[in-house]
Length: 143
Image (cartoon, rainbow, N blue to C red):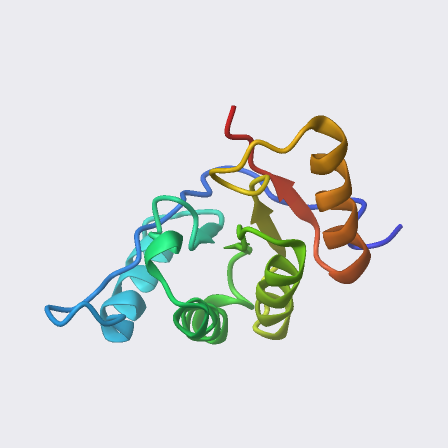
């Protein structure tokens, strides 16, 4: 059975905030401390760059930097799920590849936000992503 058919995600897997400094830049030192604290508190995994993680405020480069920092620090110790939501499937696929490159175990993806795709368009969106990422996809529903 492939890695995408089954996941071993269980327990507490919070969607975490993304720390920024006073200049509104990613605070990678703060992120490192937050990750260590969450692991010490017994979290079973973490979601980065979800809605709570301010993905809409991150540039693509910043989101990839976030995945690299978190994945390199904790990716082999805890299951990490990357918030890869974006307006187009190619953008999601690009973020998913960055997550896969840095030890993430899955991706969290909403249907294209702020748009009103119909059911067939949503299925096509996820189908395209599924074809091009090796990671399991957690569908994040925004009704």
